[in-house]
Length: 166
Image 1 (cartoon, rainbow, N blue to C red):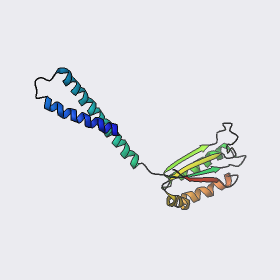
Image 2: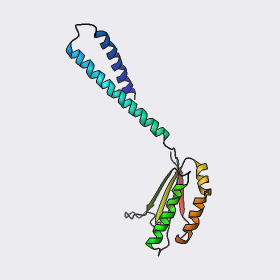
Image 3: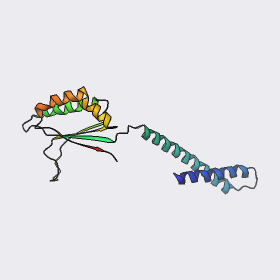
Image 4: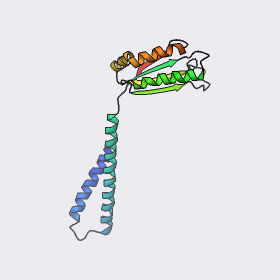
């Protein structure tokens, strides 16, 4: 950012000098050409700076969600594909809860890593702005209903892991 500022400052000084020199008839074509090149470059840098500022503003407006809640689900052994798709459909309802800022759902993929938590079939990841929103999510009627609806399809209680993004 400093180098961009320095470049803009130098370009501005050169432009001001060029305006003053513009009145002198002895100015050479090469100097005028160099000034035009600098003016063009300065304009491009101004546009880049404007874009960077716009991007920064957009990033600042994005939801800050430093609390992550991960839940792992183990399905019953002989669950049908239809029942599995119903579980996924029910879990996706959690995304409707207003406190949930981001929601992701995935199925286990065996990549041959012996450390993998392969006993779990489905994982969901949600992000919350803070622990108050997480608590509101826990009390949500949608969350409570999904928990009830899933009980008959699960092989046991889900495992969870929560962390704060640093």
